[in-house]
Length: 93
Image (cartoon, rainbow, N blue to C red; front, side, top):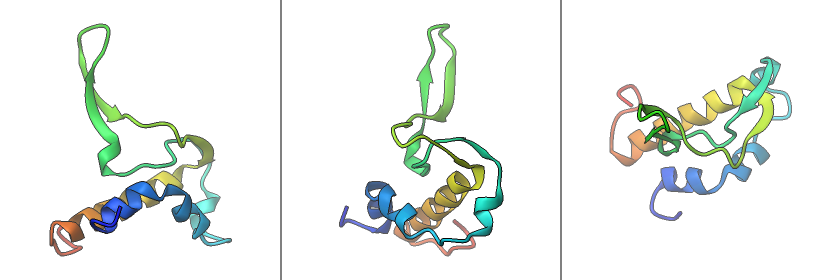
């Protein structure tokens, strides 16, 4: 968790939502079942029972019924932090 900001984000989902502003325009989106902890390392591939390979979200232990934009916001933050960790400019992340 102390390695870099991206590792900190991954380990502290609860802090992300504790710091969420009380009145955010992101809260106006329709509620759907979200991952809740969406970040770059929560995507992966797996082989289904039908032997097809799928790619998608693979971690749902923080799932909740919430505005769909919450996952989008967390994913975008993870992209920026991963880019920072890789020493990329934000516009290139």
